Image (cartoon, rainbow, N blue to C red; front, side, top):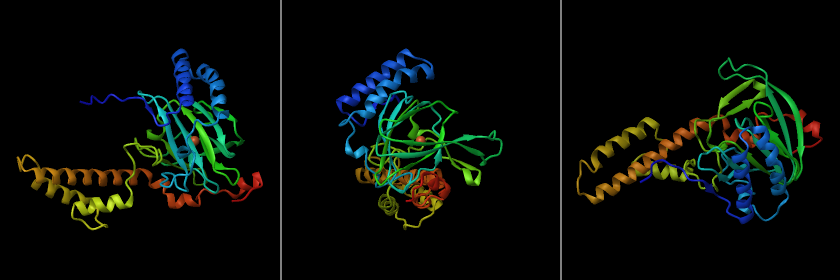
Length: 310
Ligand SMILES: [Fe+2]
């Protein structure tokens, strides 16, 4: 029986990567504060960035089903049992741009493959107006392989990333949270706006087998069909159909009826999938992939500063 105790999870299981994780865990056990832990983590992180062969290709390619849009992949490589440490790769294809986002944890971020431009922002308001945020551009960075930086919030915690040449950029993130599963923020600096990126919604990409993945359109339509609904059914219709069927098929109502029990499981799974779809739609709507294919916050001046164009 599960007591809700989580295990550590290795999505990348190469020997070199396991050795790296062991080094990190050892450092964290000896250094309680962020600054001294980061100082001790720098050397192994640099070694990881310069090592080859430890990151499987599946974790270094653009994501077909991208939660962030534009094919941007965010792959979980490792997280500890307490979910206070995650190591992930971020793959940004040429022409795609992440939204301006925060991380809410300290860590190290470095370039493994390709090149990357970043804009780093500082928040200048006090967060007193709901939905509003004033950001100031404080730094532009150009990262090449092996370059990395420290992140100790609030300093340097808000940024956006774009690949700097015609190759996808692959950066490695070591962070003191399960960054793909925490409630964070997406900013629109030009509009002085901020939105929650959703409560406990996983933004790890599809290739990472996480439980909280956004259902595909096909899965959604299939679930609607299971509940006897058309593809444009509204959430209240979904709930009503599920409740009607559940009252009819529940094992308490039909004891010993194996067919009804199997059908009940099907409708329960379909309803859960549709609820997850609704939750994630609500949570990620500010980060609508259609908007981010050509980012709404696209800043020509930024490109001009680097003398580059998509
Ligand atoms: Fe980031």
